[in-house]
Length: 395
Image (tube, rainbow, N blue to C red; front, side):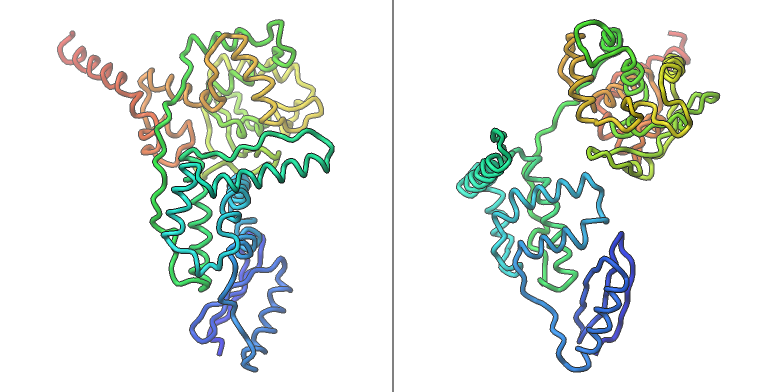
């Protein structure tokens, strides 16, 4: 008999939970009506002794069900794209025909080892991906695009995340008794040294904006790059800024939303990402000038937008604005995100408190800031000791 029934909303889905003879049943639906109908039908089947909970399912079938019924609406858009790509390119081609109950820790370890070494299974996945691209290119009457399935430790590690999450849910839904991906050793990711631009390099970058030779890097982009370098905002946060987010009197700009790669407006990365950032007098003046020149001046209008007032594409901004500006200034080919690291570095070199730096960057805790930038603080600590000596002994 069903001892407990429940319907609740989870993200954009309606979920039915109930137990039959001590076993939990979990199923999701697009609408509440569908969920209630399934629950009512299940009650009838339970009374008749005809209800059967599925216990065997192929990895591919479960993966697609998990993406559709759980990941959609419950993870951020970018995270969903990463999960879907890992499943499509690697996990489903390798494990797809196996039953969930056939997947073991040993099989997963062997999968990771083969992928890391570029072994036979990896080569087969690469061959299939290239054949698919060639087939699609013929259908669309275009040249095939290069297909690369990365083997970096970070790529493999990222793919293990949806595998572990998926199989964890399979345990909760009683398809399997234990999660074979739990505790799998991830490949060691080599530490990537943070690349930063110093103050002089940032000035060189800004001075080159608007010069002849790069058609996309016009003068109006100076305010954009200045804002990035002096606030440490993420690219998506910059693209989502509206004039109503600027507190002109108190010299603050509020980060309240972000724009994804697909142009979707969403809440910032974490709760702490919603924040007020102090802006410099130079940036304040640049924003005033930018607003005067803009065709979109209302409080709800985007500060940085297309000629139609719509959101900019982050990919295009990096390719057509940021990279040409770096080349023009003859600076190292840093990533756009490295402007955020450069901002943190400048605050550290000024001796600012780690708590303030953490708040300006929107980190969830000071620990994240210290873990990421602690090595840059050595010099500031030395300066602090010199100032203490001077205060005590006049030296």
